[in-house]
Amino acid sequence: MKTILRGAVAAVAIMSFAGTAAAQTNQTHYAGPLGYTSTNPTGLGALGAALLFAGGFGTRYTAQAGALGNTQTATPTVTTNFALTGSVTKDCSFYAGNSAAATNIDFGQIGVRTGNNENVADAFEMVGPAVANINSATAGCNFNNTVSLAKANGVSGMVNSAAGGYDSNQFQANIPYTIAANWTGTTNQSGPQAGSAQSLNVAANAGSNSIGQGAWRSSFNMLVTAAPATNALVAGTYSDTITLTLAAL
Image 1 (tube, rainbow, N blue to C red):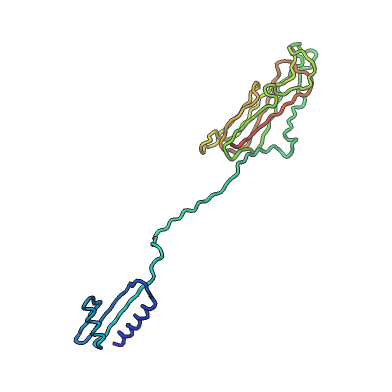
Image 2 (cartoon, rainbow, N blue to C red; image 1 turned 30 degrees about the vertical axis):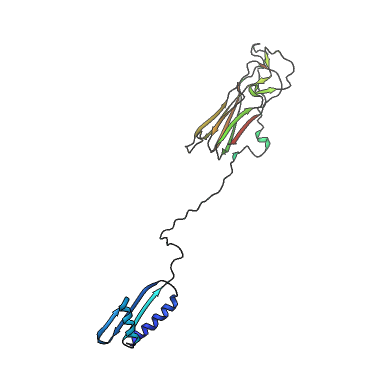
């Protein structure tokens, strides 16, 4: 009987702690003379049991427990997406030496037939082609791009700008030349593709040429060939400028 009373006191403490929380455990037990018991009585049964207890007959045990509910609907599984962003600037690179002098390509003396025993049809003509090979170990662009080659003098090629007067039926003051560039890249500008050998040529009778590329990086080789001119060459300095452009789109 003393145990039951202690339980009743504990129940009162739990109810006080829980405050207005919804009850999870809600038990009421009565016991009285002649073996009377009642558990969680309702209606008239509860009223009768309460009157017996109030009249001093038997005892009562109650137990209530409760806790505050969730602040929001519980979600057993939570999925959260984190958007990661960053940017890489478009860039094209071409290693062309450590100074401007590296890009000054000098053929030196361009040999012509100067022997007095040459046939008149051969006198003063180029002995053979003038050739320049230019190679960069680092070149490329990190986005879709255009590789372009252009001759400043167009189809005239290397021009002698101070040629003086000459018989234009026999002499010329220009030397046409070809350009052949090679590297490893891709022409696919819409997705990934394994790189392969690429080339860009500018013919002797052309002033420029270009090709579209996807992102690429590799060595870059350029061969310039000034073939023997059709006529004899006027003495003087012949020059032109080749412009290589790697342009990210």
